[in-house]
Length: 420
Image (cartoon, rainbow, N blue to C red):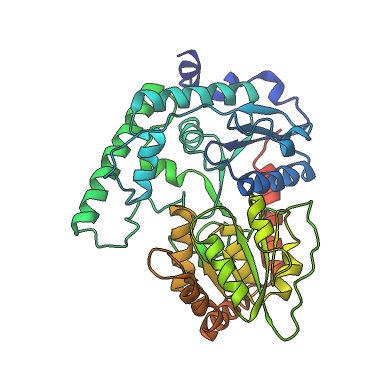
């Protein structure tokens, strides 16, 4: 491979395009491989604004499904399509016991396919010649940046940034059967990564611990939501994502009634919760972006108001007494910083790990519709003062200027690594 051969030379700096040194604006590559939700795009938009405010040029490399997303199409910034690493299919008995298993399911267990993805990222990096890369759930790009020695930042909620040994999610001892099985998978995965590194032929060897430790971690959350917490490494910037097109909606008549803010989407338990809220002594303001027409009609003229448009989160949380959501790290973090108790019905495995962490801090209750009914779940939220006390204790730990200082540091560091 010509690119790999060039990177093996004694003077790799001379192999980069000559116009890199002549360019006025340092270039930052925004790499995104997996996920389709607006939250991931929204926080990268915040990073792009940081880069531009620091005099840099953000360049997007995103999944094909997002390349022409309205929020990106409205920008004048360059956009490229991310290389595709085909997901691997396992049998019905396969279970992700650690992040190593998540990587295996993402295609990291197939050396040929992984090498093809690395080659694709290397070509993009060679053409764009960025000074650094911001990784948002982009493991193949993370491997490539480590093999090339390209400075990298990992924007993360902690789930995709485990310790080097990828401990089991269940928190079992290393000597347990699950701990031993996880260690074997980690070793096999690391060997595949090392093989890909050798075949790529770049200036650096690789392994699972090396790629996990390569980027500087930027946590877009608070420590209490980190699935691997508590840990004190990295830079904690708090939630970055924000909606710029929000609406203001009044609460239903709430004289001497508690106010519940709900953020839901189609899934098990959503309407059951709203039905019980309608029967409770609370009023509810609910954002449900993909709410079917029948759901809107079902709660019209009731104590439950359902909207498809996003609301100004700060104002809503200030007025709310409790919050129901499906485990979005950004929303969970905002609720904790506002000191609000939460009921979380996790929408996926990643959100489950976040929710379990917050529940362990005593600030949230988890609900699995298969384990109890919606009435019991609401009782846990509305009649458990300890949840609110724990949430307020967490909120008191953080001053807003601490996150702002960390964000400013992140913005400066994005450009500060550049030599022009």
